[in-house]
Length: 267
Image 1 (tube, one colour):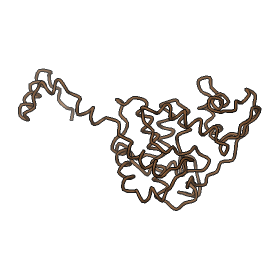
Image 2 (cartoon, rainbow, N blue to C red):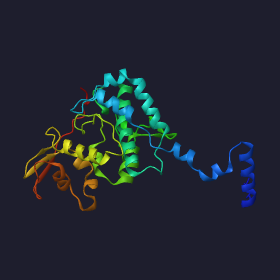
Image 3 (spheres, one colour):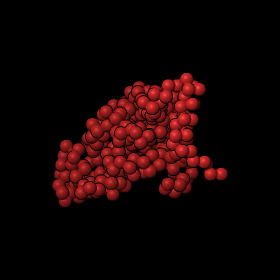
Image 4 (cartoon, one colour):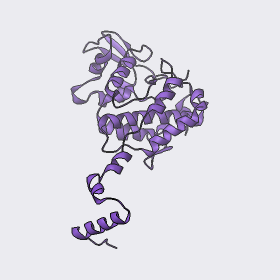
């Protein structure tokens, strides 16, 4: 049945009557109509995750999963905070990106803990891996804002789709030896730009992930898999590498890609 339309003066009169019945000053409602909404929409504090990362991730980005298991209560409380506080349009870009990056990394750790001990994230789930269908990253094993989600949705449906910043590939960690090192601090809106650049320098100059000389390079598969991202806006793989590498590649340098090590990034 169609909802009846109330004239403006009738709606105002009913609102004033309701406020009076509830002992709520009409002036207060008029002056602060969005206070409760704004408070509910505030970006969550990532300090609980920051504390766990500092405790259980070493300077090389290797993870003490047994330690996370021991602190599972605190970890699950942080995941519950993420689950109940989905990004809102009122958040700025840095708040949204920091949220999604932390969520990706935290839920990846949760996925490993759910199947621990495991030698590789690729051992989780169906033995037949169909991209975006049966891989661990396609599994909808957590909820955000009441919606069941997967790691793929965070990476491809949110971060890559909405923010146009290839540096996310230096920050998202797939629990494997060849992926970027897990940062032993949480991402925050205030430090996000410097954190992403620092991750870029760490990843590109790590000789176990990229081997770079002036005339040639053996690069991480990330630079192959996400080539379309690196080539956007007049950029290129070589330009991105040279932005962070201490050894600069020639424009016509020979590029090959290293095999990917999917073993668990465990201490």
